[in-house]
Amino acid sequence: MSDNRKITINPITRLEGHGKVVIHLDSDGNVEDAKFHVTQFRGFERFCHGRPFEEMPIITQRICGICPVSHQLASAKACDAILGVKIPDAAIALRRLQHMGQFIQSHALHFFYLASPDLLFGWDSDPGQRNIVGVIGAYPDIAKKGIRLRKFGQDIIRSLGGKSIHPAYAIPGGVINSLTEKARDDLLTGFEPAYDACYSGLDFIKEWLEKNRDEIERFANFQSLMTGLVNDAGCPDMYDGKLRIQHSSGNIRMEFDPGDYLNFIAEHVEAWSYLKFPYFREQGFPNGSYRVGPLARVNIADAMSTSKAQSELLTYREKTRDGLSGSTLLFHYARLIELLNCLEVAEILLQSEVICGTDIQNRASVSNNEGIGVIEAPRGTLIHHYRVDKYGVIEDVNLIVATGHNNQAMNQSVGMVAREYIREGHVREGILNRIEGAIRCYDPCLSCSTHALGQMPLNVKIYSKDLQLLIQLQRD
Image 1 (spheres, rainbow, N blue to C red):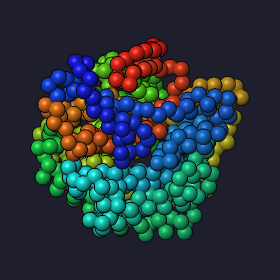
Image 2 (image 1 turned 90 degrees about the vertical axis):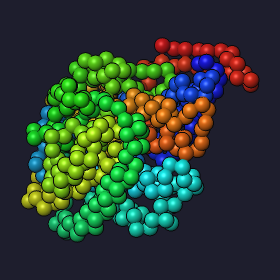
Image 3 (image 1 turned 45 degrees about the horizontal axis):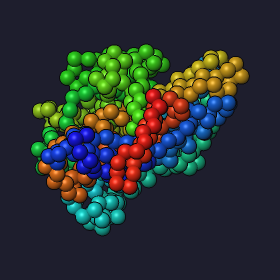
Image 4 (image 1 turned 180 degrees about the horizontal axis):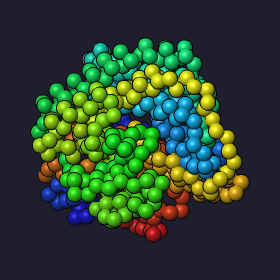
């Protein structure tokens, strides 16, 4: 660094977990370097060693209180593969329904609780107002709709798993209980207000896009690889499918069985973050870095799987065709299109004949020494990979969580926004909020994402009270 001018944002607010941003300025007060540091560590990849594989859906959902269903389902799919079983159709439908509940509650939480304060009040508004309490006071109708929409997603999860956080439901070979006809009928009454809340959000974000188009063009707008699961029709599939990697420009597009992910995806480490940096092997790091989550899934889709969401996708593409599709701020728009899609899928599932079926489990013994479960979590692609001994005892665990996939993209977004708005040393609170907002667009779950032990480089610096570097210890 050319001098010691440094800006630290710690902690980053309105996201799950702990992280900070450190920005270094050059002698002219312009940004020389900016990094997003993930400062917390979770050791699930290690302390699961020695556990019976059947316990993994319960253990790993404790990684997160926001998206426990996603971890439970990815884990259950990995365990299905260890058993070598195909689970019954009713169990698949019930898992998918629970997953839609997870998406509904998580996307509603992010848009209405965490993102809306910036969109409604503006980046430079009073920090004391930029929160859900402020939204409730100034925009009570929007706040109430968001709260009720999230509750509807939680009701779906609770109807299946008994509770909305850390439910016991998906198990190796199926699920633990069927859905009663009464519970089905009760859930079906909730769709009209849920659709109304979702469309309110969509109407608002489309109007906001038109009013703020110039900033959207400048706000961490970059071309990148994007990744997500798609079905045979090229529609995003949150539970199953092929993993598609596609570049924004269209010059790279490939699909592969997610069970082969190690042939296509590798992980890079840096000394300054506990969160690893996945990348597409063929392109290397950092060129092979990619984005996952709502923006990626919507951009790589050939179509959406439901009619209402397909109509919104066409509108989205019309509004973003002039170089906007890579803008990080459009995560918010894409998230609402997905929310609508998930509401439609949940309604279709609840209206299906199989949803109250009672054939929900297939029992078996260990057939394979490894299993890989891949799904789309609300924040992006989620990979659980287990290896077991002949008794089914866990010997190795690899977890690549959505936030990890987005790590390099979040760092790139932070750097771009910092360079765009910090000039000649002029910094105000609203600029720092924009930098935080670049990270919030990805809706990161930092608690989910850091698991490896003994694989990461370490760089410890000890400074004197006048900030002179005294000792530097480094492990590669």
